[in-house]
Image 1 (cartoon, rainbow, N blue to C red):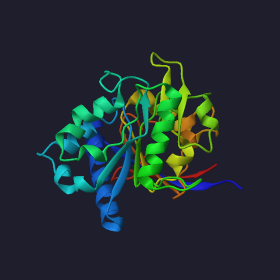
Image 2: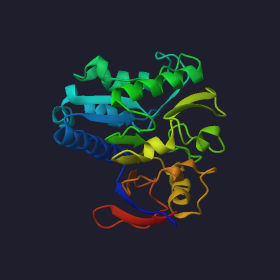
Image 3: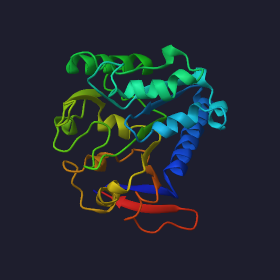
Length: 265
């Protein structure tokens, strides 16, 4: 039987407005999780996409910093390049410089991926850290309160790249994945882990991704070619926060910038 889920997309006028919407959504998710069970566990992505969102969260002239109970927030990473933590290519370094070092978040509340290790060792250590933080038993999956994703021009998300081995992993929480890139080894959460999260949103602010986004949401199901299609939350809801350029090839949203798609896969 095909699986049906709902995709909501919010279209903002420009990338700054999309980053503001993302910061607001993240802060709201943290507040809800802390209210419901006393702690919030979120996994963030790297790359250029979330950089402005990170800056907004840390900036005291915006409201987001004061809305978050930082002592009750645990930060994880969706993926990481296999580089040292001080490398310009490190997702951890980007988050630390723009966000983590600028807010009252206890250092022990951050679980980074040790990209400086051998890829398989780094993946195994990250999986072990997640199991310990979530107190998992057996085949249990961690339930993140929020996972923040981006998408590449080739349709990848996290470090789940087209035709890569990680697309076939169903049992592990985190795996090493070899990709064609200047940093060919990555460590990534697997897609079953991502789909088990309570909330997921994509932040996409680039007109060069407009066509591949249309293919991911409206095209034929080809997850080997478009790995972002693997993101089908068990909750049945998925959100895309977009600027106008990224949303150019999607159905016109309503007057408030909201669109809704029923996806069957």
